[in-house]
Image (tube, one colour):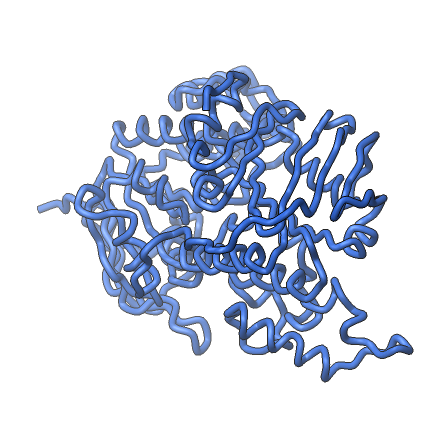
Length: 499
């Protein structure tokens, strides 16, 4: 009797050296089902789907597809069995067209000639099946991130994928693009495609998934239908402890003005004015390209402004470089921690010291390594950074702990205002709560905090005030309790709110 399940993985065991990544893990998914895998960084999610796709080999256990036992010993074999995986970082040839990317594995079918008209027609038909219109002749590098993701999905469909795996698919998408992606996935679900969906964003998981499996330390801590669980219960299964709220309460009071920005303008934004007070957390909301990040970089002196003034404690300051920003007490945690916030090959200790070398050098400029170690140890302990030691390379840490190292770097300075651009992107829910606690500690110590985030729930949960950006301008300001998704979106699309 044939199995009703599209995929069954039974007692999968996987070691990486002395580390047990998967401990007799079992998983199954039906045709036409969206099954979410959730868990903290290092829980085993990525290892599991890499084994299913053939990118990683299991140590033991059994895999069945449509009831038939299979060995998936390579990505090629995975594709032959109908398994496709779309990673957060797309595997597209940026200088080729949409059609060329979709059919890159079958161009010419082994011959020397390509029927371009037929190729473009086939690509157009596949894209049309997703419900999105994209010119098959368009060069991929000229497409938005959302459209590049559609191309990845179309590429998988061209290979007759029956099992589609998406790893953090919405990390860099706008809310509108997320809705568009979900429409595509629902359409594929109706066609019987089995979809494995990995995400740290539990709000999205509960919006799209039929079934949710929680992993912790390479094992299943629970599999349940969406209708039978809740975000709170799922979070507890992920981290192994009770989480009363995702956004911890901040008990400090808001003090006097600490920073004022007046009439900031450049070729990317114009007439930006706002204030930050001591102990206050403000948010920048808006779509990608709305000017949020560009304003932050200009305040930090990383990008040039055309005009504008910055006041700190009522005194005007000339911030013309990151060095002068740091000297005047402004810190920036950039959007990409790996490329702009950290030097991955260097140690935790060195990364923490970079923003304030004066603290660990003597009057002759020589590094006091013992002092540097002590400072790093104090911050590692107080921020709860999980690392084998302060001399461990930052690249060996999980995403959440890497982000904590960036935060530690600014804790190690005399910052007055901290700007955090997408502070929890790509980190699991347990690390998110820890980071929110650290942000609250910043505010409680009297600092001003600016959070830039594409996650509206993050802005709503953390901020005292939100400035809404659109097309390089501030379109409005919202103060609690009027910081709501409806009010933010109304301002983003150009309307107004009565709040």
